[in-house]
Amino acid sequence: MSRWEVFKQDAPGKPHQAVGSVHATDARHALINAAHVFVRRPAAASLWVAHASAIFSRTRQELAAQELSTVDRVDPAATAAPGAPLEPYEVFRKSSNRRSMTFADHVGTVEASSAAHALELALAEPTADTALAWWIVPTAAIAASDPADAPAWFEPARDKLYKQQSQYGSGPTPTVRRADP
Amino acid sequence: MDRTEDDAALAEFEARIAAGEKIEPGDWMPDAYRHQLIRMIGQHAHSEIVGMLPEGAWIGSAPSLRRKLILVAKVQDEAGHGQYLYHAAETLGASREEMTEALLAGRAKYSSVFNYPTLTWADVGMIGWLVDGAAIRNQLMLAQCSYGPYSRAMVRICSEETFHHKQGREMIVLYASGTPSQRQMAQDALDRWWWPSLMMLGPHDADSPNTPQLVRWGIKTKTNDEVRREFVNEHVPELQAAGLTIPDPAMERDEVTGDWRHGPIDWDEFWSVVKGNGPCNAERIAARTKAHEEGRWVRDALAAFEAGRSAAGARA
Image 1 (cartoon, rainbow over the protein chains, first blue to last red):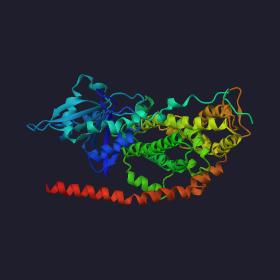
Image 2 (spheres, rainbow over the protein chains, first blue to last red):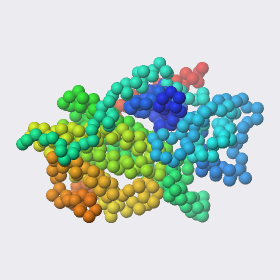
Image 3 (cartoon, rainbow over the protein chains, first blue to last red):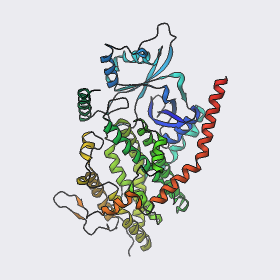
Image 4 (cartoon, each protein chain N blue to C red):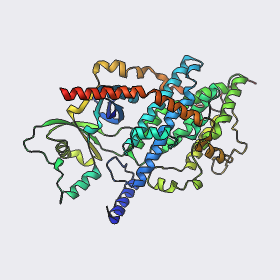
């Protein structure tokens, strides 16, 4: 078994967000494990998984170090191969150090000749300066949950109200009712 | 990296943490930071997994369907929390297989508190109220941790675990206001779990020589004694309001600071349990080993399935 990264979408129209990983033998197995591990609470509309080896990852610090080192070293992966066919890549970005339970958000799709090329294109976007970390994943490497499975996978969590802290009052107060001894 | 580059990298690293930035996988970090985190996150993950055992033992004896649903969901959550944490450790280069092996071989620790037995159903409620209450205090602190993946796992765990705490409190408050025998059951459970809950937050600051560096690197954002004080201040008034007696004759409120001050903790007991001599250490590891061995055929079948697919792919 190997590691698959999991992306959860809380509601239609919201971005898929990196939530963590599961171990699995293949994409289908990874999706089933992801549903068990990351959808024990409501607010899931779709899951994506991608094998950890398919993810091209760079932090802001790594990019800064790369810029410094290009003086004497050209990163071969960073150069778009001329004439190479373009393929779609999904771009995920972390933009804030705020308290959060998710890592990078899906921000779009680019056509590129390599993951590094896709990152160059993403870095050219006007809002790229705020990014703290990037993940680039070939679209072909992502497996999505089947919309037909959504009722069985995502809806039961909505009815399990006993998992909601709001079901349990705010605790004892000095006026708590007690039976006489 | 030579010495000067290392010093410069360390200075930049500490400046980033001081500025409230998160360190992410791929970023430079000192080896000691990586190793401390792997050790801490691994212990934390193992605690979630071993922590399923004391309460899981009561699933079949839950007194109502509602209580059974709650307990199943809670134990299931602990399994999920273990998964979140193993994931966070993996981002630092640890492997899940190595971590599991270290737990079963006794090289890795888990929380001392799970080496105590659950003697009655009220222990299930008291674990929710006290053990989860202490864990949440610790985890709210760790949610501020400088390492991104650990911090995010903590935020997700706290958001789910608050229900664990509240269901336990609800159950105990109910028993504490019930029949004399129910009240006695709640009091007995408090007598058993109070001190282990204080101990699980770790040795006093004076006996934690690594704490200053852990705090400077943002691995911990509060000391053990600070977290313990928050736990005591939150729980003593609520337990008393429920009509229960804290099993600590020295417990008193400091009129100046408003803090509740507990009596001396029996650290000999704590270290004895940590070193493997608690009431249930052997039983817990035996249960994990049995589960691991009995799951071997599933792992073998998955590996065979994966190998078969690769072979089929190679032929195609």
